[in-house]
Image (cartoon, rainbow, N blue to C red; front, side, top):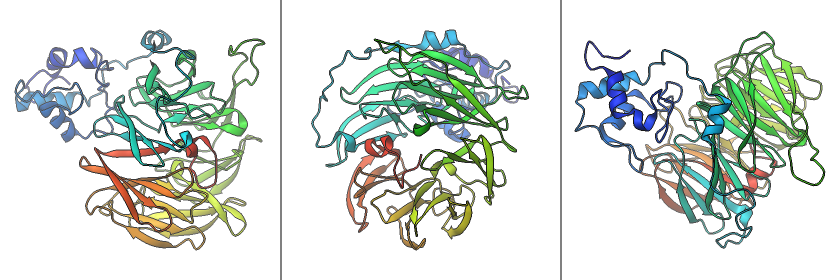
Length: 490
């Protein structure tokens, strides 16, 4: 489509005004890719506003004085249309995008800042103006704030020692950041539309999962050099988008959730190194399990032997034994459970898992010894994020969707009852709890352009402070994300 009702030619407008930043093929450049899947988080009316008024704290200018309303409407409609020829992203494209600012081992090993506990740092993703803040988790003071790629997704991933962190963007960019030196060290574009990344438990590899193209991209974690681009093709010959990739630390493997083929993939990495150096050696083993349905959202038990999978919008969950590579149970889950936000804890001598639902006001609690349903906890609306900590008596779940999005429920982990419902800022979305290292203090986002971070006492629920931010979303504590403990989501 190039025009609206015989009006302006959107293709011509795009090439004249937009291609220099967003690429001739809409694959992105200085600006993000403008393809339907990449724009899934941007509503059509918001796109109109961005074209008309620009975007603060970015290089996106305002075109309201250069284009009339008909031309703006034509452009906004056109970018949501799929291109006539599906774009490709080859190994040559990946290699050409690769940039190294500081090679591994060339920056100092001591932090350029002082804090009491390097494992109690937080990274906060601010999606309102595409920045990330690094916070001292003891004093709750900002150490630095730096720009990010457009539309970070899936959460940053730390190396085991907490020094380096990797970000993945919807546009396919993987960014490595040295926390000690407050520097971006390397970047590479692994795909056109990427879901998320995972970092191996030994810190040697990064795996990126793509929607477009249908690939898994394996990178050397040191400088983000390409190791392999793996086509995602099923036993039946169909290709698939990758919904998510996960690290399974005790297994020395990655797990991939596939959206379009009924399989579960496990990729095990080699454990040995070449004698005398750090060269990557050995072959990566792909293990695939056939599933009776498409699964694109996963939850793991503490030992990473069992994986629970569900399809968004599907009926029921399925439990797989990764050792035996077979399905062992079904879960009575309906609609759209958000398994990726699930948490676990000990209840009456047994391990339980709790899962929020995207399409209903409910948290489902299961016994992980036999995968039986314990209860459904009714909430004030559909939720998206759920968190706890091994030292906290409470589990927190938001009400992210629906009219009650300004509420957060506090659930007693032993009685399985809601003991408090907080409304920090009436009318503004409250979401995504993250605890500090010790489970004493927690951070909560007020998800608004005029939003802020709120930190609370984890036991008394008393407000301790706040910090203004533009739509802060996820918060990620170094200790919690480098440990695999009770009460943390995997």
